[in-house]
Amino acid sequence: MAAPGSLPLGNQKGLGELWSRLKFLLLAILIYRVGTYIPVPGINPDRVADLFNKNEGTILGMVNMFSGGAFERMSILSLGIMPYISASIIMQMMSAVSPTLEAIKKEGEAGRRKISQYTRWLTVGLALVQGVVTVVGMSGEYAYQGLHPLSFYVIAVTSLVTGAVFMMWLGEQITERGVGNGISMLIFAGIVAGLPGAIAQAFESTRQGNLHPLLLMAIGFAALAIVWFVVRMERGQRRITIQYARKQMGRQGHVAQSTSHLPLKINMAGVIPVIFASSILLFPASIAQWSSSASGGTAGKILQEMALLIGPGQPLNYVLFAVLIIAFCFVYTAMIYNPKEVADNLKKGGAYIPGIRPGEQSARYIDNILTRLTVVGSVYIAAVALLPQFLIYSAGVPVLLGGTSLLIVVVVVMDFMAQIQSHLMSHQYDSVMKKANLQNYGRR
Image (cartoon, rainbow, N blue to C red; front, side, top):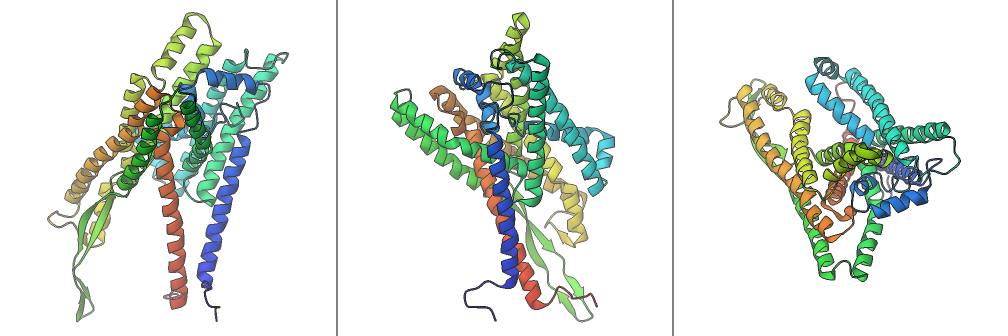
């Protein structure tokens, strides 16, 4: 007999598994944060820090935010998770247009493993390109003097590529053995780690008179309003009424007609479109930034102008960012939710939408509702990510206090809590099945 106040055995086992997943997540984040302080051999981190101080508020600040401060310290994890995200975007786009990749994707688990392997190799290629460009940009005044050029390039590029591959592996391990999406959790950890410094920097700017106290209070209230608005929108649903036809049970009994709902979220894609759009903008902008610092003459000036045009705070950056977010919302929603498949499943289960014929008409009906929801959701994400940026760059507030970082933090926390609740609920059902002795039902 269990002691008073003690949990059932099934719950203890379930909580033990959840606790082991949480411990793995915390250990992975700790390893990631330690790695952001290991410098790349041959590069002077003090000179790199001076470079970031001089270029505060440019594209380097956004790159540094997504790397969790590793780029500013020129750590071996400076490239962060962005090469893996860029490779995932490319593979998803190619899977939609390439018949060969689409056929591989439909092979089930074996096809998914092949696509994952292709994504990993593409990640190595992109990391190699970014690593070479970064090291070439750092090979001048930012490197220690007296080093052999060939040795410096080989060691530094190898360190950066290895760090990017390690981040890819760590993200996959968090997804498999931890709680939450590994990519989102690593980006979340990097942003949260920099928030105390960003808040302290904002208060220091206020103390020095560079930022008005009323403006700082307005930014704080705006941040709270954004958090409230994001939570409300992420919980918003459009419920489609579903009815199940009456079924015959034996010769005399039958099951009465029942009504249920098909929930469709306003934002089906979550925070992935913002991360994808940011990586698409940061990849060419960072290459142009480092190439302009490494090359001189007309080519260097052209690359520098390109980096400035698509840098944070510029009109072209706002336009491209909004267009990419809206486009990725539609693309990612189409990839994770198939109205035709949902309509077929409803038809097979004896369910139908009142007033709509099962099959093709139901699929079109669901698709029309999903399209309207995606329009609202994509505009909402773009607005939350972009509107605070006008205030951020006009007032000189740190980038980490912008709408993009707040959106990522809030959505990742909500997804994290939902997965914890899912783990707890699944183990509660498991203990109920054991108590009712239903797990062995039907095996005899």
